[in-house]
Amino acid sequence: MHFVRRFFLAALIGALCAGSAQAQVKEIERTGGPYVPTPQVVVDQMLRFGRVGANDFVMDLGSGDGVIVLTATRQLKASGMGIEIDPELVRLSNATAKKFGIGDRAAFQAQDVFKADLSRATVVTLYLLPAMMMNLRDKIYNELRPGARVVSHDYHFGDWEADDRITFDVPEKELINGVPSATLYLWTIPAKVSGRWQIKVAGTDVSRDVDLKQNYHAVSGALPNARGMSITDVALNGEDISFSIWGNASVRHHYRGKVKGGAMSGVVNLDGKDAKWQAERVTIGK
Image (cartoon, rainbow, N blue to C red; front, side, top):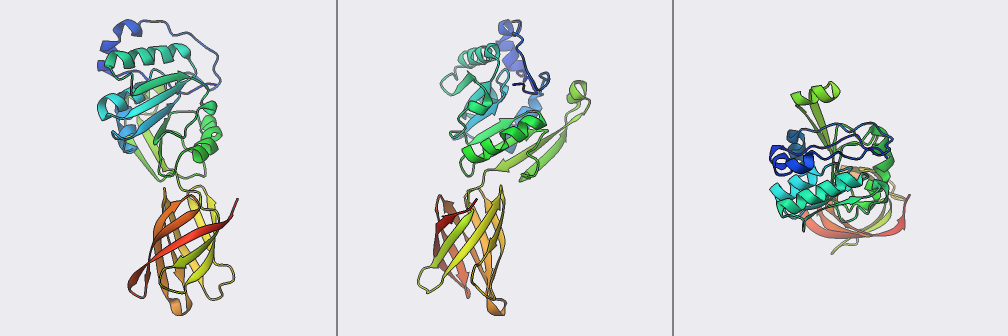
C-alpha cells in the first residue's frame, strides 16, 4: 500500500527530534506514489476545519511521521492514533510522542489502513491518492459513528459530496507538486436512515409511514398510500434530521429531530403549535 504523503514535523518538533530526524527511513514497497511533505499550516487548518477539541479522538490514515496526531494531542489536548504502513515511521512517531510526554494520548500503529478499526474515531484525517480515497470510502462511511468528521487534503470521495470545502494559498506547496494552494474537504458522517419508518405524533391521531432512500448524505422520501400528500426538504446532518410533509390545501408540517439507530424523535409544528413525534423503523432499506 502506498500513501501519498510524508508529513514533516514543524520546526519545534524537528528541534526536539533532531537526532531521530537524521535516521535513514527504511524504504518499503509502495503502490501509490512517493511521500510529499505537507506544510504545518495545512495541518493546522485541517484540525481547525474538523473542529478538533479536547474531547476528540483523531485517527490519521497514512500518518507518516505523525504530525497531525502529534499536533492534535499537543496543541488541542485531543487524543489520537496514526495508522502507517512503514514500521520505522511508526517507531519514530511513537518516540516523538514519548518525548513530548503525550504517549498516553498519542499512539501509532504499523498497519494496513483497510484493516484498521475506525469505530473509535470522532475525526479522521486523510491525504491519500484518489484511488485510495475511493477504496476507503465505504469503510469510512460504514465504520464511523454518525456525527464523526472526516477531513481530506486535496482529494475527495467522488459522488459522496463534501459538506464543506475551503481552498487557501500555500506557496511552499508549489515546490512539492507545482500547485501553490491546498483544498480541504469536510464530511460529517450521516446516520443510516434508509427504510420504512412509522411516525406517530403525541396527543394526536397522526400516524403515517415514510419511506426514505439514502445515498451517503443525500436522502429522499415518499409517503406510501398517502394520496394528496408529499414529503420534501429531507436533510440529514450526522444524527440531526428534518423534513416537511405537505397535506391537502398546501398545509406544511415541518419535522425536526434526531436519529438513534432504529428510532427517531423530535418536534413538529402542527397548526402553529409544537408537538412531539417519534418514529420506529419497521423495514430496513438498502
